Length: 162
Image (cartoon, rainbow, N blue to C red; front, side, top):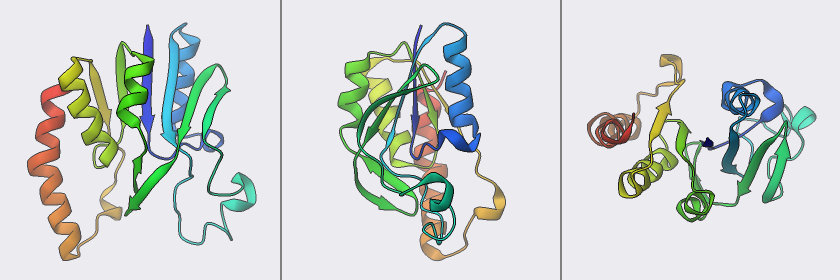
């Protein structure tokens, strides 16, 4: 089976499930891919903190293989509140021709873009979200965003999710 994971910010050395799950998929003899941005997560004070063990936040775009998982890092056109717009996402998914897609996030541009593509191309898709209440913000913009997620994005995602 050809399994594709989409991850906005992949940090394979950090031990997060968005890389552990693809590694497990590969160990089960699946052809496993990840499409991600070419940047690490924009934590505050990245240069003073994470850069010490991850290196520069912006990485080289292109293909690599880690633990048998094929990873495509794509440039970001822009980021809004840690939500990147990954360049040519849909085109790259179509080239890979996955049997199933696992989207690691539900509140991102990537989730919505993949949901629309999966609906159009009839590709089975699953979504996960590890957002915790402590990161939910209360500003007016944030409240509008969460309203949009709850009343629009979640409905689109639920229609395509297996």
